[in-house]
Length: 389
Image 1 (tube, rainbow, N blue to C red):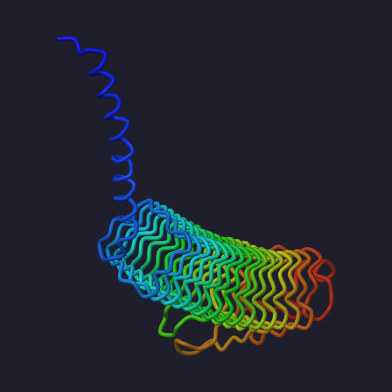
Image 2 (image 1 turned 30 degrees about the horizontal axis):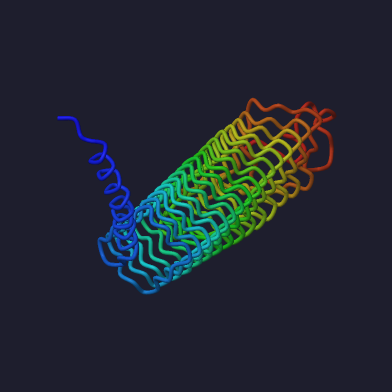
C-alpha cells in the first residue's frame, strides 16, 4: 500500500524532530566518556588539551590517540595505561607513574617527566625531543627507535633498557646510568655523557661522533662495554675510566683519550687515525689498528700489542717499554711491534729498556729515539734506540 503524501510529510517531520535529539544523546555520551577519569577508563581519542589530572588514578586506562597536550599529569597513576599515538606535547608528567605503560608512537616533545617512573614501559618510536627527563626511571624500558634529540636525561636510570637505533643527538646524559643497556646502532652524535656509567652496555655500531664522555666510568670486576663497530669520530673520552672495553673495528678518527684509564681494551682493526692518546693510561690490543697520525707521545707501551699496526706519521716520542724477560709469568713484556708500519713515525726520546719485539717492519723516514733518520741508519732504528728484544 502506497503511503499518502500526508503520511510521508508526517514521517519526515518526525525525523527532523528526532535526529537532533539522537545526535545530542551521542555527543553527550561521548562527552561523559571523555570525563571519566577512573582506572580502566576509555579515553581514546578524547580532546583533553590542558586538562588537570594531578594525582588521578588512570591505571590501565585507554588513552590511545588522545590529545593531552599541555595537560597536567604530575603524580598521575598511569600504570599499564595505553597512550599509543597520543599527543602529550608540553605536558607535565613530573613524578607520574607509567610503569609498564604503552606509549608507542606518542609525541612528548617538550614534555616534563622529571623523576617519572617508566620501568618496563613500551616506548618504541616515541618522540621525547627537547623533553625534561631528569631522574627518570627507564630501567628495562623499550625505547627502540625513540627520538631523544636534545632531551635532558641527567641522572636518568636506563639500566637494561633497549635503545637500539634510538636518536640521542645532543642529548644530555650527565651521570646517567646505562648498565647492561643495549643501544646497537643508536645515534649519540654530540651527546654529553659526562660521568655516565656504562658497565656491560652494548653500543655496537652506535654513532658517538663529537660526543663528550669526560669522566665516563665503568664498574670494576671486569664489567665492560661493547663499542664494536661504533662510530666514535672526534668523541671526547678524556679522563674516562674504561676497563675491558671492546673497540674492535670501531671508528675512532681523531678521538680524544687524553688522560683516560683504559685497562685491557681491544682495539683490533679499529681506525684510530689522528687519535689523541697522550697521557692515557692505556693497555690492550692494537692488532692491525690504524694509528696513522695518532699522538701516543709519552705512553708506556709495556705489554702493548701493536702487531701489524699502521703507525705511519704517528707521534711516539718519549714512549717507554720495559722488558723483564727472562722471568716467571706475570712480568712486564716488551711492546710488540711485529709487522708494524713505522713510515714517517717519530720515536724521538723513546726509551725501550731491554728492547722491543720487531719483525717485518716498514721503515721510511722514521725518526729514531736518538734523533737520527732510519734512512741514514741502515734502513731501521734497531741500532739507534730501538733494539730488538
